[in-house]
Image 1: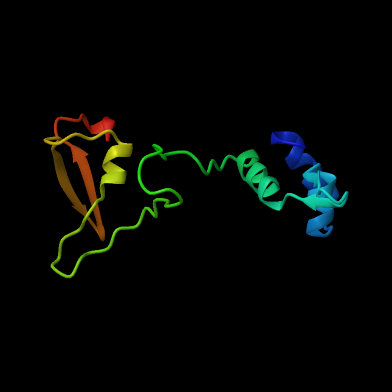
Image 2: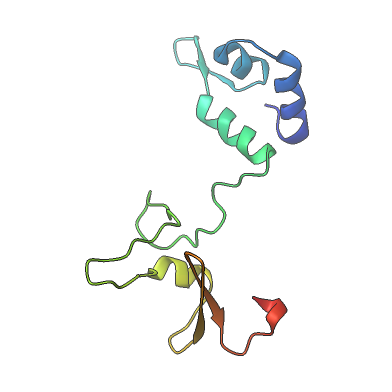
Length: 121
C-alpha cells in the first residue's frame, strides 16, 4: 500500500481512471475468505488525506463520546449566549479561572488570554 509522496505521485500518474482502479493500483486491496478481492476505499482515502497533510485524528484527546467529532462551529443560543464547549477548552488545556480579554472586530469575536503579549495571540 502506497503512502505519502509515493501515493500522491501514483494518483497523479494514473490520471483519469476509475475509483476502483485507482484504489487497486495503489495497493489498497485485501482478500476475502472466498478468495475474491476487497477494495479498501476507506483506508485509501484516509492515506490520501494524510498525504495531503490532513490528519483526521489531530486534536482529539480521546475523551468524549466515541464517534463524535468537533464541528468548530458555535451558534448563539436563544438567550444570546455563545457557548464554547468542554471539548474545545480541554483541547487547549484551559483550566477553571483562566481569563480572556474579549476583542470585537467586524463580525468577529477574538478571545485573547489576559496578560498575553501582542504577538502571542
